[in-house]
Image (cartoon, rainbow, N blue to C red; front, side):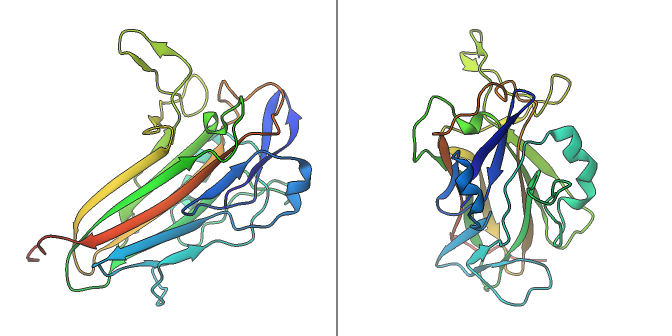
Length: 260
């Protein structure tokens, strides 16, 4: 369960604490300081097989196949920004990466989690991965406005590949020519645009077909609250929340490709 709790105001920007995790429903909540004592895990990953034989592994040397992964030792999260995140680029997509702590070790500035998905069966599989959003509490402020998701998707056997995409909710600027809201920049005015969340209920998704026996993919999620977002200002609300959930559902492919 991901629990993002506003703890103080700094330079007119929101400071948020995360003490939850990502699962079928992982709660991201803005709440009172009392919630800082909670220590729920900041990330869970759930895999459902239907006729497939996929497995989750926390690292490439993990020998125990799993359908559920649980991160531990959660701390509150403080506001951060993408240019500072880029300084840690080489550390964001490896097995033993550590989420960055503040100087007093009281909170994290970003959360990182890497895992592997492997086809351990003898038939190809298709699977769907999604990061879902729900809203257990209503408020005038949408916490998704300042949330950033960096999603790494790479061959698990290739340690030199670190491809990623960065996602955010659309901006508040409506483009009359396109009939849509413009995308949001990843951070400040000089940064690139983020890919837009798919909808109010889905941040991102990925379809994988013909995932052959023995195939391995390495995924990493990096989450932070962007301090340079235009919405990161003013008084911190105490009644907003969103829930994030990573789900992977797999089934046997119609035909297993012949491997050369």
